[in-house]
Image 1 (spheres, rainbow, N blue to C red):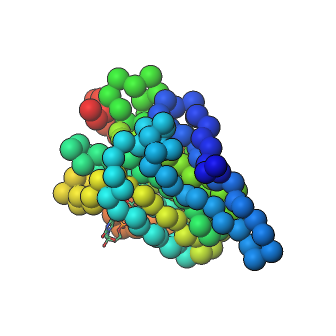
Image 2 (cartoon, rainbow, N blue to C red):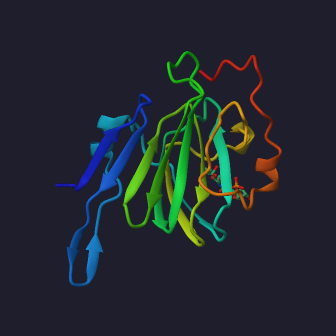
Image 3 (cartoon, protein in one colour):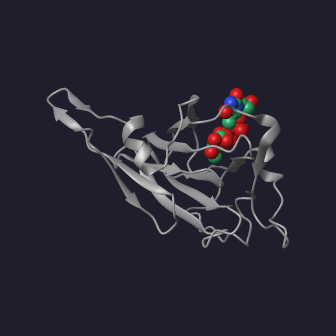
Length: 185
Ligand SMILES: Cc1cn([C@H]2C[C@H](O)[C@@H](COP(=O)(O)OP(=O)(O)O[C@H]3O[C@@H](C)C(=O)[C@@H](O)[C@H]3O)O2)c(=O)[nH]c1=O
């Protein structure tokens, strides 16, 4: 009994994961990841990185980021403190949901994660101060193959829940998607 379950989203291959805690008088315990279980939802390789980010300010947006082939990656995004609005954008060439943005709330309290397959960009907005995210990746960090989308690109129409209070210099320089962009393979 892993206590991990997955719900499909409207976007093929993108899953909302939920973990059920085992509680006792000390607190709780729950499993976040188990390769043999996640295989069923498309995780097909080793974990190559585990990353932890802390975001101090409510309203800050990070992303949207992706890695280009051959470094395109599957990521599991989990919120360990606070709450975020987490977004994945489908960039897969030929996908029926190409350029759709799926958003969901992840928090320490709801114990949800987003499982994002290859070919997606990812970003989030901190809805509380002092947000902490934990990332599992199935590829190494490849800064030469990083791509980014502008979080406020009208073509994506992402409805960030609260006013954006902060973005990195890099994220502010991402360009809106060009009309002839057909996606990534
Ligand atoms: C992403 C990343 C960054 N870094 C370094 C580069 C830089 O000096 C510092 C901060 O990097 P960034 O500004 O890119 O951090 P951040 O904006 O938080 O990047 C993250 O954004 C979200 C939306 C994601 O989906 C993540 O995969 C990742 O791209 O950490 C690594 O060493 N390894 C990594 O895997």
